[in-house]
Image (tube, rainbow, N blue to C red; front, side, top):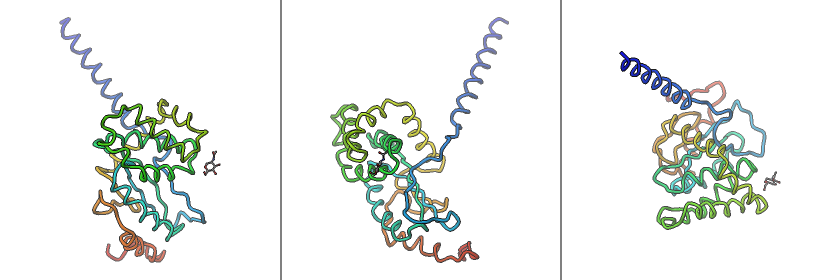
Length: 230
Ligand SMILES: *[C@@H]1O[C@H](CO)[C@@H](O)[C@H](O)[C@H]1NC(C)=O
């Protein structure tokens, strides 16, 4: 009898633990994940095409995907809006730290987040697995902090540094990862246009490719919101 009571108690406790951890896994962030690309021009939410890009800062395909997408953004102006979500791939050793750096920099000055991303792309090789195999985690973070100082200014170097010991920046980076998982992202780059996943996920799209995707959407008149191929 005594034993049975113990077993019951253990089962009840286990259920409570499971319930609490499920509730945590479903917690909703206060702010929509990602970094908005800022336009200089009027935009009307009503006729804006929304692109969501999932990039890993140390993924070569993400790096190659950025210049043609940037060119497309410049071409379409306010008709196109973009949110980049960092998505750290587990097989890239420095993906999480560099994704976290994007959040840290974004907190310090949101107008240089894309500069930071471009710096990671430019110096990407120095963060590859092979190139950092013998480096300590601390040395890698040092390298990231120094690069971040180029984007936010050297006076912000201590703030970037302390950002790496701020639990909040860890949590927001986890949210990015979890958001990607919830959308079925399994590699980078993944692109969603108006919420729909583009085919050939995981490869870069060139400028011609973007034109062929966006042109038909832009030319659709407002009373023909739905493409005839439906
Ligand atoms: C953020 O960065 C922009 C562009 O470099 C700069 O003009 C602005 O002064 C910065 N803002 C702050 C608060 O440092």
